[in-house]
Image (cartoon, rainbow, N blue to C red; front, side, top):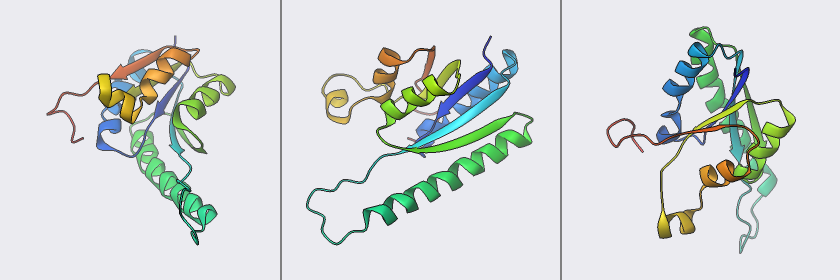
Length: 149
């Protein structure tokens, strides 16, 4: 049913709470490939003189790549076919574009589950994805004791 599953991660423990669910779906649905994705957002530029933004973003991409490589290695050791990708841009938009251009069948991600004013202030990548994605989106809201947020 699902040939390619996308697992967006932001580097947080909360985001990684989706991984057991991704493993279970990959096994149960015979997913052929798990794609790990990290989106590096552009650094804020307001009032920042003398900062090399290109070098800063390059360092962020390198760190994101190393982070994904660690998780990719763990999943590969468990027998999954895994690839990873680091993109630059705004998270929801970059994820949606990746899905549309790479034949992804399912997006699986963890969510803080914020609502009301908190969601307005912090935004919600998950909310934007479920409204714009062209494929099913699995949202996992971890219990407080499940993962360190």
